[in-house]
Amino acid sequence: MSQFCPRFTPGGQVLYLGDADAKLAIFEEAALEGLGVHANHHGKFPDLVVYLQQENWLVLAEAASSHGPVDSKRHQELKSLFDNSTAGLVFVSCFPDRAGMRPFFPGLSWETEAWVASDPDHMIHLNGDRFLGPHY
Image 1 (tube, rainbow, N blue to C red):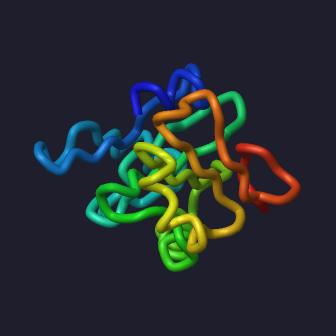
Image 2 (cartoon, rainbow, N blue to C red):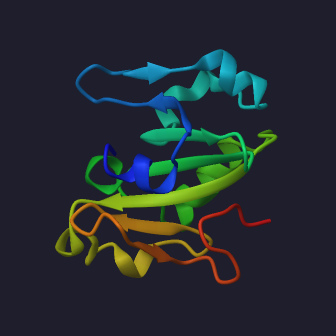
């Protein structure tokens, strides 16, 4: 995520960063609560949550190598988990490279983004009328 955040969430505040080894690397519970997100289900949280204050967006990123990408089931889970958010939601599936994305691509949910670390300056847009923003 060290390549993703400077490119697509510059100036954003990391509110949650899950780490399988440490179990929890960053968890800004009070900040999440302030945005209407009840953080008592952190086991179901995406791998990364970044708040972009200027846009009032929460970027929810999933590392596909850990629990899979944002497919339609995960999209609904995340929308439900963050349903009280006062910020718009942006959903991003992250892959190490195109080969790693290939088997998941057909199942990626509409109204999401896909990012490939091997091509860090580019994003695949599955939102229709929006680019990297919440879909209302």
